[in-house]
Length: 72
Image 1 (cartoon, one colour):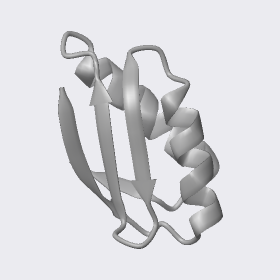
Image 2 (spheres, rainbow, N blue to C red; image 1 turned 90 degrees about the vertical axis):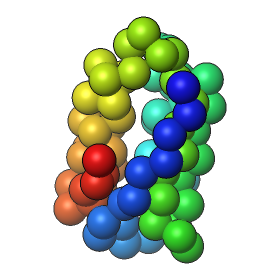
Image 3 (cartoon, rainbow, N blue to C red; image 1 turned 30 degrees about the vertical axis):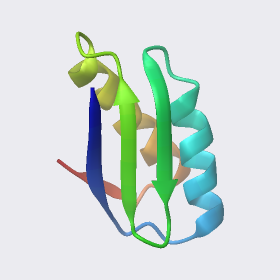
Image 4 (spheres, rainbow, N blue to C red; image 1 turned 180 degrees about the vertical axis):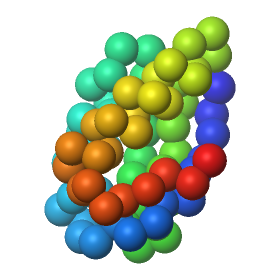
C-alpha cells in the first residue's frame, strides 16, 4: 500500500534524510521518501501491517525530530 502524509514542523533537510533512512530499515517497508521541501512523507509498506508499521514510523520520526508531526 502506498500513502502520502503531510509533515508538520520538519526543520531541516538533514533530519529528513535521517528519517527516510530509518524508515526504510523498518520491517515491512518497501520504500519511503521524506521531502523537506514539500514537507511530505511517501511510504510504500505491507498492506496487512500498515497501521502497525505507521506506529513504528511515528516513533522513528520522533527520535530524529521530536517536534515533527505526521498528519494522518
